[in-house]
Each structure stands twice: as C-alpha cells, then as structure tokens.
Length: 273
Image 1: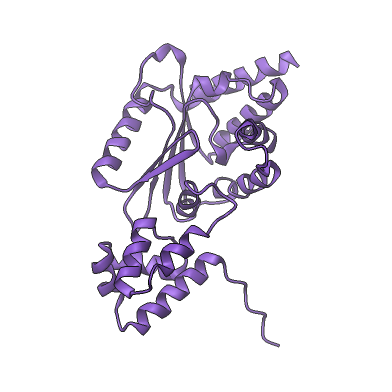
Image 2: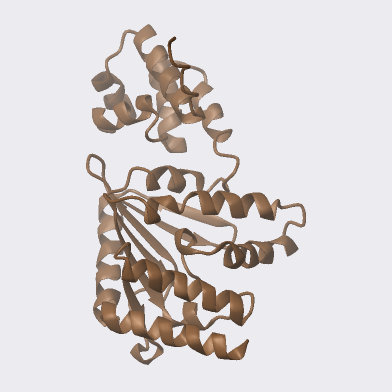
C-alpha cells in the first residue's frame, strides 16, 4: 500500500505555482532571475518552498511572468500566525547557517519560556485588545527547535544587562527564563555574551539587531521597532550591521563570565520569591 502523500505547506504551494507559471511562460530560472534582479539559486529556493520572495521581488515576478499581481497578492496572505513584518524572518530562520541576535531589553524570542513570552506579548494588548495572545505564544514556542534540536546552525546571543534586569512577569518568571538561557549556553546550543552596564556606550545602543547568514544566499539583517520591522539585504548595510555587532561583542564579557552573571542574577530573582 502506497504511503499517503505528505501535506504541502503554503510556501511549497507558492513555489509550485511559481514553477508552473514560469514553465508555462517558457522561461528558465536564469531568465526569471535576470528580470527579478537576483540569483538563479534564489529562484530555485522560491520554487522549492524553502524561501519566500520579499514584496518587491514578488512584484517583479508578476511583471516577468505577466501574472497581473498574482504572486504579490498571494504573498500578502501568507504566514498569518506572524506579524506581517516578521513573516519573512521566520522563513529565513529555517534556512540560516548562522544567526546572531542582540537583545537590548528583552530575551530573544527563540530563547523565551512560554511564561516570559506571554508577558511580553500581553503587553501589546493595550494596543490591540483582540490580539490572540495564546496563539502567538504557541507560534513563538514552535520556532524554538531551531535552537534546541538543530546541529547545523550556529547561534550567537549578545544580551545587554538590561535584558537580565528588566523584571518581566515577576521574579519566578525571570528566574526560569534566565536559567533556560544559561542551560542552552552550557549545552553549547548558543554562544552567550553579556554587555554589562559598566561598559557604558556601545555600538548597538540603538536597539535590537538580528543577523542571519546562509550557505547559498546573501546575508540579511533585521531590526524591529514598535509595531514594525525591516529586513535589510543590501550588502553595504548588512556589512555595517555586522561591524556594529562585532564591535559590541568586543565590549562584552567572555562566554564563561556571561554565563556566571546570568546564573547569579537568576539566583537573585529566586531569593525574591
């Protein structure tokens, strides 16, 4: 008896439709890539469902394939479980070879406990009381295996001491959260560094930064603000962000000292309970 076919993700359906439309137009991946102004490898990633185009690339696909806005409209409907500005980042995470995250005032989402994530996400309900917080928590937890199970991805975590000291959800939530980060560091799932308050000014004071590198695609940088986020793929801008990260990393505590500081702060929270 033949095995039942595996269900296809929306991204895979998007990629399959792109391949069908391209072949119907009699175009090669190379020809489409010239019109979109990207590499043929990236078109291959799109068609395989491994990566989604950005909105500008989707519009160029429509122009090259003469599909009257079809792919741009479909892209807007993808990944409803994530905020529109974060959907592409969640896709990129699945492909990254190396990720570097700087947490200015919060523990990065991939490392959060469910209790910590719920407190962070609930803080936004004042802006949108109808937000499905529980669903967003589940979506955030579903991203965690990239760190806890992957053996191929290198993950650097640089935390400002403010992220350790900001009491999200109370002492118990914070103690559990910081112990989780320390556990991941001790298990060598992450490379951990903390920027202590004593450093003063540093290259990443402006805020959160997320860098991702890939085997067969250009690196990207992601920054986020209130209700918005932006992915940069311009090489000059990405290189600038990498330089800023490296400069801040040079000011941070070594891995073992960072781990010791996080354990110490976690114990301070435990004594408060």
